[in-house]
Amino acid sequence: MAKLLNLHRAARLVGVTRGALQKKIQDGELDSFDGMIAVEELHRAYPDASLEDNTTLEQVASIKEHAFGRRIMEHTLPDKEVLAARLHELSKELVESKALLQHTRGMLEGVNTLLSEWVMQGGDRSRFAATLKTWLHEQRMHTPPASDAERALMIRDNFLRVMSAQVRVLPSGVDFFVEGSDTLLEAALRAGIPLAYGCSNGSCGMCKARVLSGEVKQVRPHEFLISPAQQALGYALLCSCTAISDLVLEAEVARTPHEVPEQQLSGEVRAMAQPTDEVTVIHIKTPPAERLRFLAGQRAVLTLSGSLAMELPIASCPCEDRHLEFHVRRLHGHHFSDYVFEQLQPGARVSIRGPRGDFVLDAASQRPIVFIAFCTGFAPVKSLMEHAMALDQAESIHLLWIATKESGLYLPGLARAWADALDNFYYEPILVGGDLDATASRQENVIAKTIGPKLRAIPSLTRANVYVAGPGLAVGAMKKILLALAVPEAQVFSDYE
Ligand code: FES
Image (cartoon, rainbow, N blue to C red):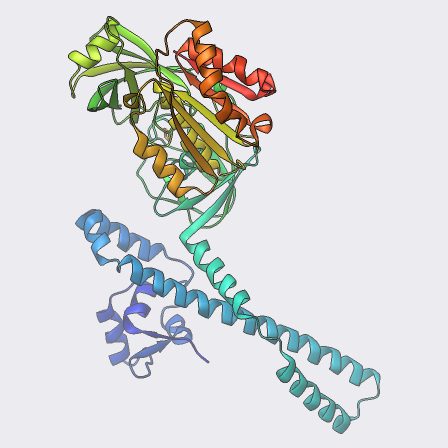
């Protein structure tokens, strides 16, 4: 049966107004049936408009977008739930059509085989007609319908393929999904994949990569020009394009901290919070054309007031674009800490140099993970935890957050939220009393006595990668205890103040 379109859809499909289409109908140049137009008829009336080619529509959409702005365009889209429901219905139709097509192909092959046999056997027409009739009847009766579960799966698969595209990156072989209106770069960083990039706003060209298969679409403007020759080879900017279909990309992925170059940039303190009197959380934003590229768990040197500098772990995720987060511990008599607690205000200029350090996740490993954070050692652990969640490949994740008193566990709601959201995540807050900066021997005694039993209770401890962060003496003491508990040295990673 001919596929029929209403006037509105038909006009959009060929890139003309409804008025122009109506005029053609009135002039007798286009046939319609009850206000509907057959696709074949539309093609006959507009032979130059390829129904596969959306160029005209894109031009119209682009003009509209520029004329009325993105917000107006967003208003013209249906509600998200309506859109999802329509998509679901279309997916069902697609599954049924594919099943019908497959069945019809099978029937045609069967008829072809019967015909060949008939010719070879001498061509008795009436016998052939009877055989064909019986065969067709059997085919109708024995067509195994797809089970409801299979159909539901196929419908969901279609639905998801529209909602998100899968991207494979070569030669590393890593892959990620692009959801919503994310660019390829945003989606990769969100998935914990450190693609090469610079500005993330289309001006530097550092995110240029080659599309080996699949379709991309530019969704953000860019100033950087890709030569026609490179465009012909499939090069595109990952910070300005999204995926239309599943993709295979050829792009550089940093696998070690040494592959991420150190940068010097400026920023502004956008917000500050003191969740407890022991810690200040600083939120910094870099200028629109500057991004700090780093791996989760790395550090940066912050310089305040022109000369007060301190190297601190970055607590935010590399996927957070221009936003950087740092946790500063209250250290009385320490110039940087005193300045942060007593004088720093939102709006202050900050200089940032980094990234530094190699306290990063072993992204290739699927071992269980144990994070041990002493007080503000939680900052790099927070970044690593977000990376581990994005990779979603660890068998289990344990977090032991240790402080001398309650106020040292300054973001307990966040750790509990992880525990609520993840089935394989276990959070244990531990208070040890005393002083984390005390002598090494005291540290070892306290840690061995208080934390040793908790570590021994983790069944996968000796198989796990263990990441320890916090004050130097506490971290040193913890490493000795871990080795004494038979955790191989190669599986222990540390970061200390
Ligand atoms: S990161 Fe600079 S152009 Fe994409």
